[in-house]
Image (cartoon, rainbow, N blue to C red; front, side):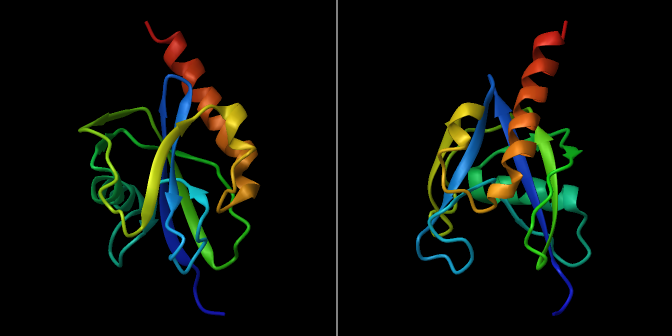
Length: 140
């Protein structure tokens, strides 16, 4: 097996809900599954730069202040860096319909009922959404 593929994903949280994208059924990797927005880290690019680029390309928003969070992925072919994002500018849209056929906001309680690309991330994902909501509630 070669070097793992470097991936950067964004956990966009708003009002206690997380944005998930539905991978198009024709995708080679993880088809017809819900996932976080994000994608490959290009050569010479940092994961933080990649997640910013991918969010702009895929969902039409410029993210601000992405914060790295622990979100282990069991697929040994991937080296994933996840970022918690609570601030962005732009209007959310499906700017990559060939990659995703839907995007929606979900509460932490709804996530367990989804066919996730990486179901092992569910506990970390729920924790990230709740942490972001708590942090925003505590802000002055």
